[in-house]
Length: 331
Ligand code: PBG
Image (cartoon, rainbow, N blue to C red; front, side, top):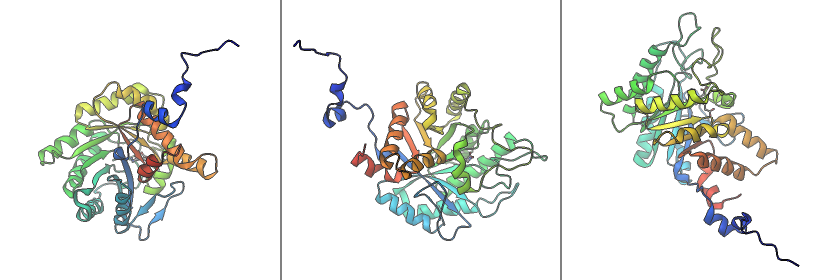
């Protein structure tokens, strides 16, 4: 019989684990992972959130245990979401967030890197990310930016390594950078939620932070978060943030937005962070819970897709498992 040869076969690259390992383009490392943390002033015992398996809303005390366990698991970088006990319309009280960061710093010193989310949505009665006009029909850009810049300096003073503005106002990166520099916080970096879309995938998070928007005249965040259909707006917003002084540009959500990650990465030398958001995490967890996917394998596959698309940094609710799962490579 004539021997058939396929010189152009691709299957030789898949023949065994060794050649797959040698030729894989993407290598995951737990060192690029950031673990989100929720700390709520009104929580006494840690509370679990629907859909967010393994993620708890901590008290000031229990967050220290959470971080200690995460350090054991090889995770040293965190994104902190402080939830104050009291909501208001103006004159926000940032003392809880400040106290939490100070406490973390006292316990762990330089062993941890803490990025503090900077937004007003868990401070406002209406759940919007800033200050509204009197009628509650419009989110006011400049007063919100001024408030956020003030808040940012308090977080930096408390010991945050990085400020992560997630409000989506125009001009906030420039304003925050200027304020930080004036006060001498030039080592504090800014991770901008640069391409943050108005998404259905933030549901579990809003439950964790009590931050669902509810103003009578303004029911959703579409006047400040980016439309899922608008790639140009996403890339332009991110490049604008870069010009204003952002050190890290984030794309959020991430898994359905890998085209945004890729397009942005081609146009910037800044590190790009991909945030696998609460609803995306919950979707993956539900699939695994129903026995339709292997939990660690499905997270690893998502992370691989994000890195393959150009993400340098991954923010995931399962970050604390990254080291173990990558070592075991269960997929
Ligand atoms: C606050 C904020 C949100 C998220 C991060 N910061 C929610 C929102 O914009 O409504 C979402 C994170 C997640 O879903 O995991 N502005």
